[in-house]
Amino acid sequence: MEKINKYIDFNINLAEFFDEDNKDKGFELTDYVSSVNIACYPNFTNPLAIKNALEFCKFKSKEVGALIYLPESVSDPLTLDYDEIEAIVLYQLGAISSFTKAASLNIEHVRPGGLMYEIASQNLDFSLAIAKAVKKYSKWLMLYGASGNILKETEARANITIAQEIILNKKYNNDALVDFSAENIADSESLLQRFKRLINNNEIDFADNEFTSIEFDTLHFDVNAGSISDLLKECGNIVEPRPVNYNKVVTSGWVE
Image (cartoon, rainbow, N blue to C red):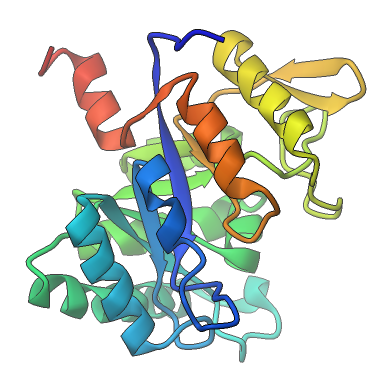
């Protein structure tokens, strides 16, 4: 298949999964992506992993974002009030920003992870609390989240720039929302075919030979999935990965 004259952000997580030699599984994939999210909550990483990931991204000239999580101590996230959510967000942004400052870097976006991502995709108040905290930290940061009406409403109400994301190996429902209860798709060929349909038709499958329209700015690739390197290479042969921020600037007409 010939390369399509189209650009889309390819995105992965770093400082989250490690191999048997304690090497970040995402490092070998950075050549094939345009942006990375660096985990910055102590439950999921450690300070040295953050430092190493940032330095690696600087060397590779990759756009960097913060990957934030809910603390393990939170048993019922929906009972959190705005101040508690704000504190959780600001704590993590402050942590990663100390490393970016030391490395003369800036974070460009924020992506919730795990249960925080799931709840934000389904609960507007929760999503707004995250967005307002991010904007309070910096009005220039972009918020990554699951594609759908919740994120678009968050953009409108919080007046924050968003990136609508598709997680390539997640299953989706007929309303184009992630089915978080379903097992991930493991077959690389199925994922490649899904990718091609997304790029060509802006559609995603929700059942055998059944598809629904979906909007997206970025595609997230699971570094822990099998054959992920080969899949990223195949996708990169079809379209050129380019960060969301740059794509939006080009679309606005500021650059040619």
